[in-house]
Length: 76
Image 1 (cartoon, rainbow, N blue to C red):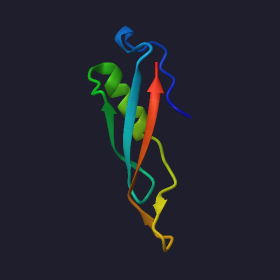
Image 2: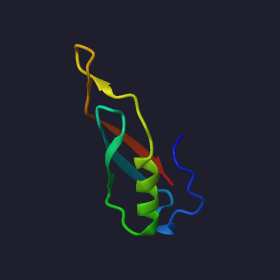
Image 3: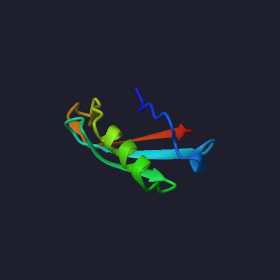
Image 4: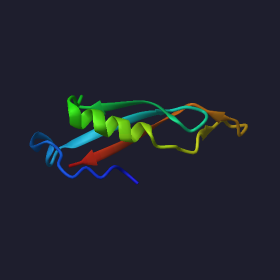
């Protein structure tokens, strides 16, 4: 489930934000980046929320968990 943000900044309404997450081999989010770059309290809260997510890690061809990336688009 993606974060429920009641009041995104007016400048973001109707805009698409691309979220790039780096996922560690243990399924934890290592890094979150936004395109275009977001800043301020809203961006901090959104990043903090997304860093709390846990994923099933990517697997190598031999089935060993490996680091991976996940890309998602948000529209406010």
